[in-house]
Image (tube, rainbow, N blue to C red):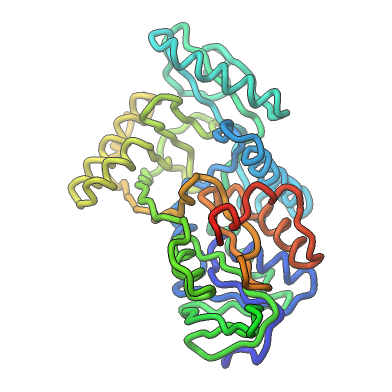
Length: 385
């Protein structure tokens, strides 16, 4: 099938953010064509821990509130069509520390104070309460923790499938395995057409949602290099089906320097990751280091939940490495590109949490020409773009 002859909006990049944005714009009646250089959702979105939360974002209030908007957007959509339709799951997140690490107690209490001040549910819980919340969790006497009931996780393939179906239903076009070659602009810099591997598409707006490819796409669109998004590798390990206690369905994570985190998978296994392991594999990205990281993650899970030792979690475990986008200041880059009227960018590390909120906010701006206040701290202009 040839590419459409024209479009209102071309979306470059069809991971979770790009697909959500294309869906939201199509809902507003725009003629949308979305492109991906590979399979839509097959790169960053296919290798994410998929924790939907505002809990871990407490250093910057505006960024926390943007993430809270993402959490709320999922809840709103789930009420409309059902959580199972988009793969929304989970009943909160829990982090904790033992009495031998009082500095972690202080860190969690400070975090909880900030979250409650900003209106995000965060309850201080003792060891008996945590054992009820997370059956099977091994805790030392005197352990205390922070429980965030609003946090969720999502089955990303299910959400991507739903978004693709919505695009098709609304007449939007998704072109996979087709690269963007450039952007044709008028003499005043405004968007005239997207140049693709399959031809040129005249359009009014061009939105970059390319994840780790954002920098190269911005350069193609503007002729300027140095867009501040870097690629970070992250290791995820999936275990075979595990003997999880009935009712266990939350994100567990460590407030210490390891940043270890786990959650269940739809098939009954566990998904594991850790900040310190990610740092190690970035420094030494060999297959041996990946396998060593996999073993370490599984052993940590066994320490946290000893009942898992009833089976051999190492046997049948798999791992994958995600290439994640990270703006250099850690915060999303959202909005119009300088001197390129009609061109926008959406680059973020928290793509799963923020996808629906970014889609809503950028669609509002593109539709009305007015910037939503929530986007003000996150403009490309702060980096000169």
